[in-house]
Image 1 (cartoon, rainbow, N blue to C red):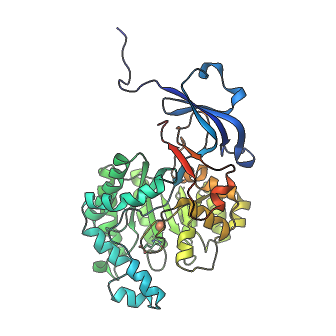
Image 2: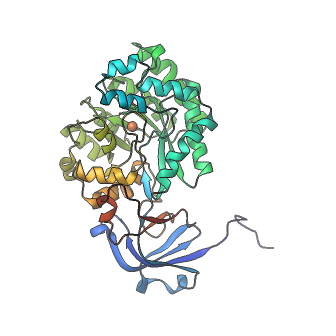
Image 3: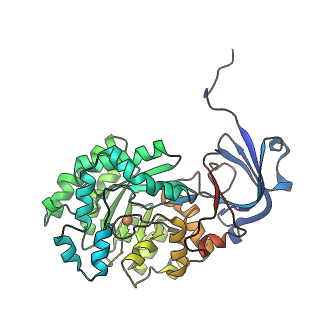
Amino acid sequence: MSAQINPGLAVTRQLFTHLTLATMAPGAPDYGLTPDAVIAVEEGRIAFAGPRAALPASLANAPATDCGGRLATPALIDCHTHVVFGGDRAREFEMRLKGATYQEISAAGGGIVSTVTATRALSVDDLVAAALPRVDALIAEGVAAIEIKSGYGLTVEDEVKMLAAAARIGEVRQVRVHKSFLGAHAVPADYAGAKDAYIDEVCIPALTAAHEAGLVDSVDGFCEGIAFSRAQIARVFDHAAALGLPVRLHAEQLSDLGGAALAASYGALSADHLEYLSADGIAAMAAAGTVAVLLPGAFYTLHETRKPPVDALREAGVPIAVATDCNPGTSPMTSLLLAMNMSATLFGLTPEEALAGATRNAATALGLTDCGTLEAGKRADIALWNIAHPAELTYRIGFNPLHRRIFGGL
Ligand code: DI6
Ligand code: FE
């Protein structure tokens, strides 16, 4: 009697033919562009991706899908989002355009506090329902993995609830979800003026509870004058380290507090925003292998003028990723393609860097080693596009040329 391993997991093999590939493999020049190419998929993973003439004979006799000469890239990865939240801030946007100050908006019940109130009022099911149209917009652009943060609950119960909603999204949609605990995002009204007490009494217990529930893949924070200091973030990161969890940080968005260097000292997966990043911060990130995640949607929405130091990051060899930062206050954006366009037009990334930033380097920012390029052994997470050259993905504004997204070979 033969033992059946993995009953229900069919040994499927399939070919995608008549393709141009942008493999985005590390070190491959010019996007890893490969004309007249095929991809062979076995059990949800890429068995071969390359020139048709080099396809091993052992893989040649599989059912084939003719892709009509289309361009294949790795499926996209949005490595920084706050896509789970209640309510919206459209009225606040209106007030700001009419000249209202942040204080006036806060006094009228707006700002981040209004999102916290709206998020606390929703159940897990309600939060999932609110987030799905945003997630679906990302998936429709070929996104196969998405990072989702907590940070609008700010109580133990509500932070856990947000991460439970994030996890549920990965069950009801064909998308991989990386869950980041962001208890140190803002100070809730009942802890106004008592940030240290909030860290000790809410943030760290919430992290423990969320971790015990299996809901934390990494630990994030917001290091900024309006949020938390280096010392406060360090306390959260010490707790993350004790739990064996990797960290990432919102750093140097509005001022230079040395957050990126702090994050790098914990071996952070990423430091994000970085408009005010210093030379020391760059050196620390380069030494730690910390990815620089650029968020042009927030830069654009806030009318910022100080740009992240892209040339210096490049020179130092820091990997650069690009993400939507989808959130109701500073980046109400559900298009990773638009974030790629903005990263080029506003920050000076090349279209190739923008695509690497939404594929290979975004995977690194999430600690994922099994996706982000079209290479043998990786998951078959592939985007097929109705375009001739990958530069078009970054060049176009508000146009979605996705033909089909392949997720784990399906
Ligand atoms: N940086 C930001 O700009 C946002 N969060 C963060 O960490 C603001 C989020 C909001 O206003 O809702
Ligand atoms: Fe953010």
